[in-house]
Image 1 (tube, rainbow, N blue to C red):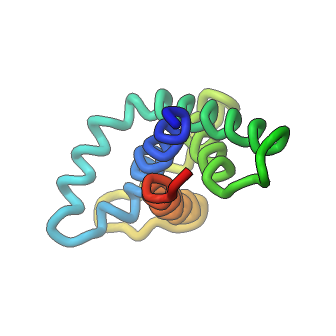
Image 2: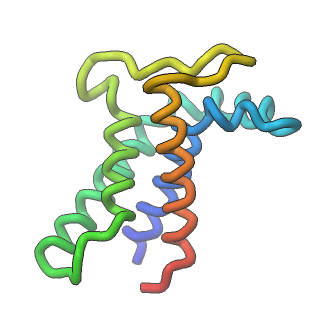
Length: 129
């Protein structure tokens, strides 16, 4: 139960950190979200470790004894890998675009994946069991 909550919260927080390139473009709240993300971003690696560990634990649980693999753990592993990309590979993640620019390429793909991770995390919070 606690591990599932950690996975859902890591999906939401990690999705927020990945999707900030798109969320900054929201009228009225984008600047505030951007400032908050800038303050929280140095701790993104912690969220990545939690997402990766909780997602992997649930994946192993459901592969070995559970009914089937769920999308919650797959998205959690993806969020963890995306947030830990620099530490795992030594290569830079695609940079967020400058304010006023539209994200493109890999940055847009990560931002859309972040939105999906937020939605999956919210779904996990309201899904029983």
